[in-house]
Image 1 (cartoon, rainbow, N blue to C red):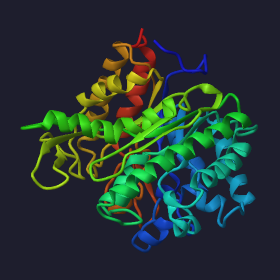
Image 2 (tube, rainbow, N blue to C red):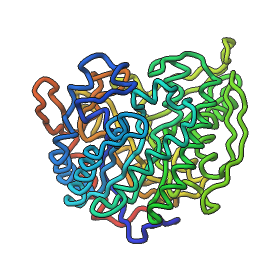
Image 3 (cartoon, helix red, strand yellow):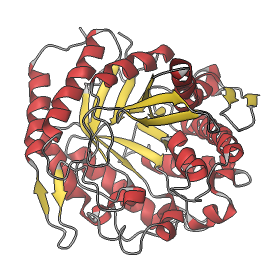
Image 4 (cartoon, one colour):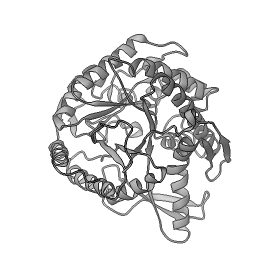
Length: 423
């Protein structure tokens, strides 16, 4: 089994969240304008009450916690950095470590400062250099004692950001069918990651860098379905990972240009030290006579509150597929919208069992982070979906542990008491 570069690192069990979805009091950004007024304010006040949530994670038996920093708080104007915000995140990380939780920090989780969104967001002139400057500032503070963050993710789900912002129009900047901007944005995100990694490694040689890649399982059906499923797998899952792993950018999708470019990688090695993998289910792919001639829909199995298929056996397959890149893999998100908490316990049992099947097959899985510890603002769905192991009363701010909280705690305890499935 391939080893993570922290030789003594344990298997990471934990939870994930992101700044805009839980912090409250949002600062000016593309999402503060795009979200329904008041919704992003009524979350968990994590920015101020972070230690309460860290205590819940510690109660779970977790040893890792993934969070993100808010670019819009840290750099409220171009090149102007808020040292108070950096101080606050440093205190947050110190509190995390005091509870025995390894921080996994995402630098960009979907939200752009308003000034950058006005310049074009991911399509802004000099976006790679702008993001690298921001990354250098944050890592320069939080990679050093007392915070000592070692695990970094530059971008969360870059292809989702582009797909929903430029093809589906469900997220800012709310464009539809703009395949050209999608491909140009993908190339710019890759350039930004590579340049940021160069600076991160210069500042913090022990840092481990990745992205969180949303990895869907695509199954084909009917005429041309299997071929189109392989194409979907390449476009959505693989082309970004391959670019960051090799420096050979090759981005294309139906209706868009083909961008090809080779970028020298820092230290002549992959800019991914591990691979963050977010898994939420399976999609069925078939041929249609309507351009772009590909129909993608949820599978036929049981559904979450959002109508997403619950397909735990797919996690084994996507982990094996992701192992093609020879990197340790961190499951950086896996969860279910389930307000009644009637399906989450089995969701956890079955997905962790599928993960362990991949581990036994030799896939180098280094951890599992559940989405999410608490309910949160869920982007275009606002406050309706409930992903939390802990329920949030948005009117009062009261938190209540759901029964699945205890299920996850028992699964973590059982895994630690049993032999390593990867041995």
